[in-house]
Image 1 (spheres, rainbow, N blue to C red):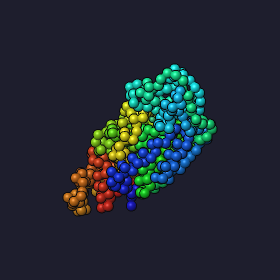
Image 2: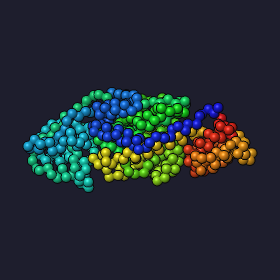
Image 3: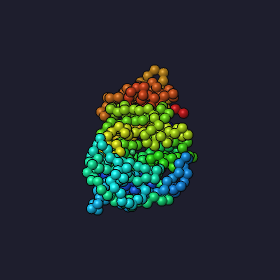
Image 4: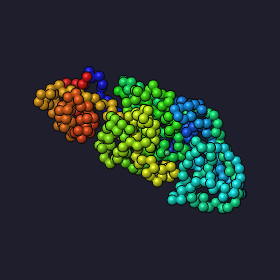
Length: 440
Ligand code: ZN
């Protein structure tokens, strides 16, 4: 028996339309919650993700040193608004949580419009949209509003009320470990610190949670660790608390922005040639329209996982990269911007990538002198037989030729251009008739 079993079952074989609806419903459920890098919105989000998979909650106290950073005070908002002279709520956190600059300090006061203006943020180029702004590490307050709203504010006195708390508490994150046959790990990470933004934040969280649910019910060669964490500070906190785990991480994916109308894109790890980089490139090439990017020290939590002190083999799967779509970090990144089918196909792409790393074994041809007589092993018939992939025969020949102990299945997929799935099916057939054996 080979040491590693072929794991074909990672492929999603259900109804993608049903899956898309489930993913979208999850995004819609989480959308109204006001999240930040700390606070009850994070806890509520993790509690709801916990209905999909058993997420373990971790809380790191404010003031804890994590590498060069310190866990900040915890932020929670009860209410926030700007009232005009008649007492009307002209900017209202209750109608959209993007209206309040995230991490605004508590504040109450009256001021004239001229003074208030320095605390107001709008997008002149997109006059109907509300921008998303944060002030995590500078004690400040502010409101975001559409340019149309701003233009409509008459001069005069306004009352500002930010009923929030910023005091010692915790940074909260979620973690889920799925053990496989091998202690070698795959890290899957998604950020959960944005308030009502659908693509940036909720698409990645939702795809990650449903990916975990799919893996949970299947036999796994590798072990999987899912992180649902506030961006940057959450990733740094997790890394600081888990240095002993890091040597086990052999592959990793940051999942972010997977629901927009754009094609799938993959950003390579800092190493550039990690197995995950090659697996993702192969799968995206097989899927058709896609884009591959080299590593750069920007983006999401790949910045932390690929910092030089760790240099983990972690890439990022997205659709349109952050900052390259006008809806990014605005109120237009809403439930209309995210498509069920895009969420579903992102999840199936993840499964295809994981299927490559699960099955990337190296084999030895047991009859390497001349080609084996395939019909003797009933392999030729199965080529002609119903249901076989037209690539099956080609896959058999490539496998027999390159299975010299020096080429893995991914090497063979790259060199032949044959879909990894077809190679797995052919390898299984060759193993069953004894023409291949796993290389020691
Ligand atoms: Zn963002």
